[in-house]
Structures are given as C-alpha cells and as structure tokens.
Figure (cartoon, rainbow over the protein chains, first blue to last red):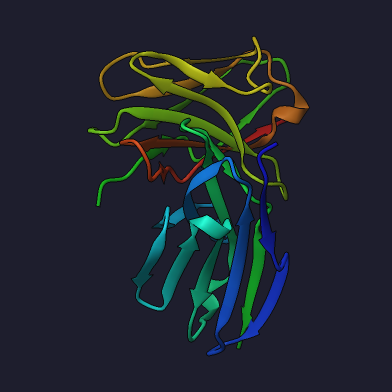
Length: 109
Length: 111
C-alpha cells in the first residue's frame, strides 16, 4: 500500500541551528509537498516539489523521485519555525494527498 | 497571494446536531477537498470534488457526511448527527491540478 514515512518524529534545536527532515515514500506516491503546521493548527504550504530542488529564504527542499525520498532543509532556525512539518504525496494519478506522520520541531532560545 | 477561506474558525456543537462548515476555494482552482485532523494525529483525506461531483471519498466519508458547491464560490461540508469522535480540525483545500492550498481550518468540538 501507499506509504509516506517521516524522520525524525521529534526534533529540538537551538535557535540558529540547521536541520534536515526526511520523507520516504513508496513507489505509488508522487508530486510531493511539504507543509508546516504552526502552533495554531494552520497548514502552510511550503513547497510543491515533485522532483529537483527549490529554495525559499531559509528553507529549501530536494526530492529525488527515482530514489523515493525528499528532504527539507531549515537553516538558521528561529523559534517561529516550531511546529509540525508534514510531507504529503499523491497516490498514482489521483489528487488525494496522503500525509506522513510528521516531524514535531521545537526551536529553543 | 490567493487564499482558501474557511468559516467559522471554531465551532462547538451538541452531540446529535448538524453542522455546516464553509469554505471559499481559490477562484481558478478546479479541485476541492476536505481533510480532517483529530488532535495529535496526522491529516486524513475525506473527499475530493471536481466538476460538481465527488471524485473520490475515503472510508471515513460515510452517509453522515455530504459536500455541496451551492454557488460558484462556496464549498460546504455538512456533518449530520454529530458524534463525539467527529471532534477534529477540518481543513478545506483547493488545487489547480497539483500543489494544494489549504485553508486555516475549522476546529469542531462536539460536546
């Protein structure tokens, strides 16, 4: 069946540190997206990244579709980066998103 | 930047009552969705809607649930006879084809 797995499940960083979050996905998953769920519960679209690399400020993401993984890089982390990071992908040719279980990030002063 | 708008942001309802959650998707998007997230769990797909009909639904989306696009801008989720376990954050989303945009959610509490 379809699988979207994220690691690590939890991460605590000191402000200013860098981190890498990983998302592994099964063969039937494509069109990866990364989301940030902030402490208020809002889901913020970070990247739509079926393949390749994209950057947006201190965040960047890389998807290697042939090897079934995607990475989210956070540089110079800030307390406002805290929350849960989800990756999600479409199954086959459909539009339904299947979410991973998330990485809970806490950035401390 | 275009947004998906959801109302209300919070709703408290008595068990057994009907609720309607409202969404205004991004105007030029073609696909509309509802997802839910029970507290502390991952986001789960409920239903997708395309060309004025349901294109896919999950096992969760049983006869208790219905969706409607009553006019050219709104997209609603109706939950009939709410149960305690329906308490969750409900997210609306829209997409052109790929690349979702989610609304800020409606937190539903059934008491």
